Length: 276
Image (cartoon, rainbow, N blue to C red):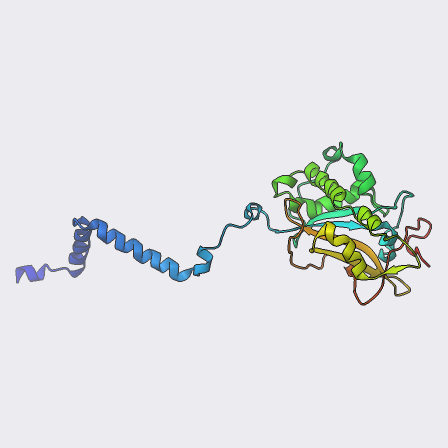
């Protein structure tokens, strides 16, 4: 009876658990606890999430999968330009120029990463020739806008992790994916009277750009469909074929295959209506 009065169930239970860990079979008990914990974890996580293969190395730090290299045609750029901006075509605006190098579906990643003229000191002559502005903004203001909106997002990739690398890469891509050279080989020339089928452009561009590219058009005041821009989707190593999700960042629309496409020549005297 004396022992019955001193009986404490919680104390006895605690003592019993202590004995479990003090027993020689402690390794077995610990193994069982870890197994139960692992089972609970697996119950919360879908199996396919555990066995997903590692994606491209840059995806660990970049919020994008593809880059979009964009070239525009000065002959039709001003046709759909808003009245807030003045259109200015220099005399030598007779080739496809760079519009930008855009990481897919992401913009303005770092507002404090500024572009300075010293970043582009060695690239200025080439950028002025192949990446000019056609508005009353200065060339540097245009490059600055492109850097802030798109370049800061590309900087997570080692090949593009500085303004100089970003703009140098764009110049290299312009030379590599030359629309001018492809059109010359395919006998596609600017004209106010001659128009082309969409398939004509595709046959000429496919050997150069692969399958993942887009021709973009605008509609002029005479309801003509006019080619203005070409976007090619590339991987971070600058090869073609990257499949990206569609976006609505561009004011231009994909060219329609059921309509003829005009390829206007530049008209410095009347850039908003080059083929009246």
